[in-house]
Length: 167
Image (cartoon, rainbow, N blue to C red; front, side, top):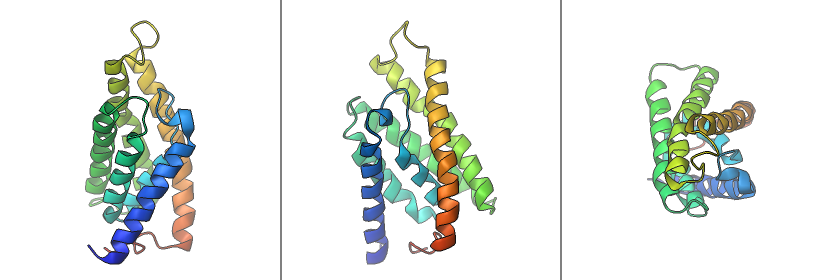
């Protein structure tokens, strides 16, 4: 890995962690609203952003009040979602369409996190059904990523995100 790629990856992972921690209590519960999740759209521009985002998720989830199980389910959700969009990007070149698909994929895969919360009892038996929790988490995730589509689109106009990290 080239020095520039390594440095950019480290900075991006750190930004992901800081944005997650700034999201406070909304970053880890059933009302997921992680501002950092908009960074998931970076892989639409270049798959080399994948390690930076995953490292950011790993470090951010160390701070989760849900314990180390959040590392397993949270990281798995990100790996699966990012992997799917990287695969789909081989066939679709339109960046806005890819970001829209990415948003939907992340909404669907919030089921991983909803399942984790069900396992650890955060949802409780009578308090909230799995489907309702998944709906709320998917809604928060998709809202953040929809805003992220605009952020990344305009950021890409200023900085060529496909070339900001070595291909």
